[in-house]
Image (cartoon, rainbow, N blue to C red; front, side):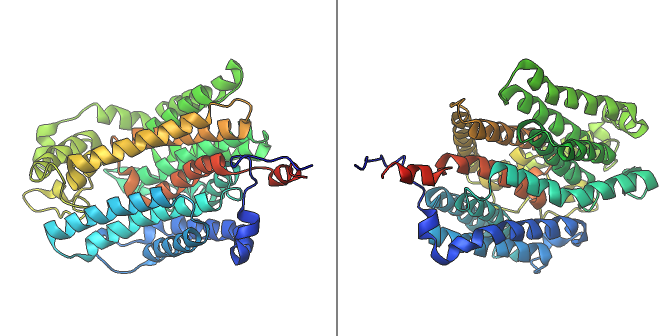
Length: 432
C-alpha cells in the first residue's frame, strides 16, 4: 500500500527533469574551477586603466561566460528566479541612473557586467545544488588559491612583491596585496572549516597554514582584520564543544601575533597610527588610513549632489585624479560609501534589506542541530559574510571579482542546501 508524501518530502525532481542538462553537472564543477583559476591567475594582468575602458579583456569574457551559463541553467531549472530577477532589476536601474548622470558609457556597462556576473555565479551554484555543495565550494576555493599563495610566499622570500608606499608586499597573482589578502582570508577560513567539519584531513591543515602564511606575506592590515573576524565568527557559530570552538579563535590569535612579530607588520601598524589628514589634503600620503579618510571626505560631496538615487554604478571607480587633487583618482576604499554615492539612500536601503534577509536565512539554516550539513555550511557562510562586511569598511571588497566569486560560491552553496533533498531515493521508497 502506498503512503502519500507531502510536497516538502517529495524527492528532488532534478534527476528526472534535467534531460540533456543532467549530465552537465559533473563537468560544471570542472568548468567553474577552470574559469576561476584563469581569472585569479590573470588578475594582475589587467591594464592599470582597465576601469576607465570598455574594452573586452579576459576578465570580461569570463564574466560573460558566467552570465550565459547562468541564463541557460535558469531557463532549464527555474530555481531562484525571483531573487535573480530582483537583483538584475536593481542593477539595471542603477546602470540606467549612471547613463542618465554621465551619458551612455562603456565604462558604466563594464561595471554592470562585472556585478551581473557575480549574480550569475550565484544562480549557477543554486541551480546546481546537490552537486556544488559547501565542501565542494570550499575545495574549489582552495584549489584555485594554491598557486597565488605559493607565489606570494616566494615573493616574500625574494622581496619581489609589489612596492606599496615604499613597502615590498606580496600579492601573488592578484592586482593588489589587499585583494590577495581578502582572498587568502576566505581560503584560510574555508580550509580550517574543511579540517574541523569535513574530515580533519592533513591536507586541509596544511592548506590552512599555507593561506595564513600567504595572508601575512601581503602585510595587509585590512586582510588581517578580515581573517580575524571570519575565524572568530566561525568559532562562535560552529557546533560542538567549547574546545572545538576555540580552535578558530586560537588560529586568529596566532595570525595577529605573527603579523605583529614581523618587522614590516609592526612597521605598518606603527605607520597607521601617524595619520595626518592635513597632509593628505595636500596630496602627501603619510599612511593609508589618512589617505582613506581624505578620499571618503571627497566622496561625501559627490553623494550630496544626488543623495536619494545616487549617480549610478561605476561613477566612483572611474574618477580621474587631477593636478590639484591627485587622490581623487583613488578607489573609494569603502563599499558602504561607494554604494551611497552610486545608488543613494534608496539603493543602500535595498542592499541592507537584502543583506538582513540573507543573514536571517543563514541563521535559520542553523536551527536544526540534527542536520549537521546545513548547520556547518551555514556557519562557514556566515563567517564569510561577516568578513566581507568588516573588509568593506576600509577596502574595495566587492570591486575585486575573485573575492566576490569565492564568497558567493560558498554562501550560495550553503543556501542551496535548504532546497536539496539529500536522499531522493529514500523518499521514493516511501511510496512503495
